[in-house]
Length: 175
Image 1: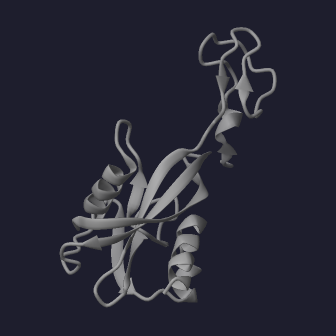
Image 2: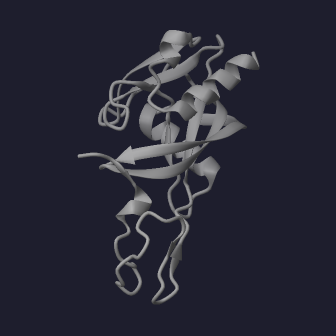
Image 3: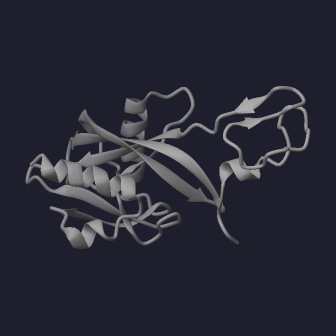
C-alpha cells in the first residue's frame, strides 16, 4: 500500500459526517458545519546524549518507520506533558538512562510515515547529560543496538529521520 498524507484520509467531516468536497486540502473545512482542521504538526523530542569522551549515543531502530537505521533516543510528547518531561521519559524508556541536565539545541520539521499515513511532526532536539552513560539498557521492542561514537558520514547516511541527521550535523559544527 502507498503512504498518503494525513489530510487525504479526511473523506468525511469528523464532526457532522458530511462528505469532503476538497479531499487533501489544508486546512480541511466542512462547508456544512464549519469544522476546520489545520493538520498542525505534533511535537516530538530527540536527545543528543553525550558522554564524557564527547561521543554521541546512536540507537538502532527495531521497528518502522526506519527499522534497522540509526536514530536518537526520543519520541512523541504525550498529552499533558511538557517537552522537557517527554525528553526525560523517552530517553529513560528507550535506554534506561537518567537525564540529569538538558539544553535546547534546535528544532526541525519531520514527516512521520506510520501505517501508511504521513503526519507532520516538529522535532525538538536537546543536548543531554546523563547520570551514568555506561548503564545503557535498551527497550528491546523499540531498539536493537547502540553505539557511542563521533558520527561520521557513514552513520549520518544511515539515519532513520532527516531531522535527526540535521540536528547531529548542527551539533558537530558547534564542536
